[in-house]
Length: 156
Image (cartoon, rainbow, N blue to C red):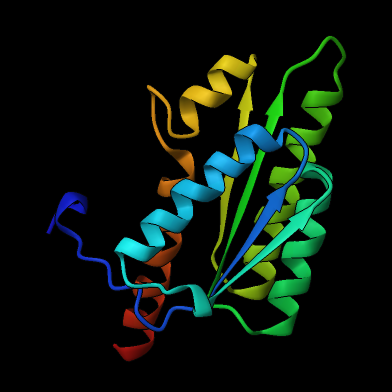
């Protein structure tokens, strides 16, 4: 079975979503795409926790708190880092990615990186349900697929 043929069942999946308020016009679109995907796949709102944090820097800490509580099967991290005139963008992007990766490895819970890193706001909007893609939707689908994969591994 190829990746295109995978059937995802989100029923009963408990999902945590951590969203950055910084660049909220973009991140709210990422969240909308993620929630639409989850609805379509049967992961209903009562099984979802959405937590807003001030910025991308705070996403890993909130994700770690969710993982430590053991109440979710997967975590989706949504944010938008848009390059500015200083190297701040590079430092943030590297640390957020490193932190989220570590949380997934340490906890054994899938942590999906749905944090955009773009050069311009136009590029971010294009990837948040615009002309290029819907990274919020893609992140939610990846989370559900990983939960399904892990459940299958436990049963085999």
